Length: 136
Figure 1 (cartoon, rainbow, N blue to C red):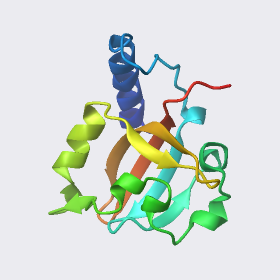
Figure 2 (cartoon, helix red, strand yellow):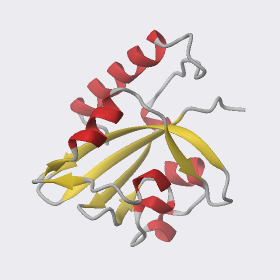
Figure 3 (cartoon, rainbow, N blue to C red):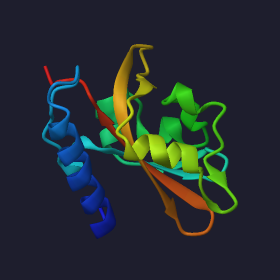
Figure 4 (cartoon, helix red, strand yellow):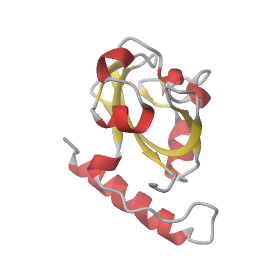
């Protein structure tokens, strides 16, 4: 389920994407079904993920549990997600600016994605991943 705060983020992400129409990434319509939701612990270990992860990354949900998020998002390998009980401010800034993050599918193919990172309770992080590739 997508919360109202996540809907607000989606709206602002769409606005940023549309404002960057001249960028190499063309605007994409985003719906909650286009977002891969991944729940992590503070160290980046995948606790749970939605069925969209199979579509986006090629992994079944049960294959991802217990793995580090860097299996999907290599650029997060050396990034501390949480600092002083808050989302790492640099990571939050990059997500807010719609900076593309490299993501990796199960077959090893990489693609650019946009991330939305939020704190979920005291000890978890939720990451929403949206591919910046056009649907074929």
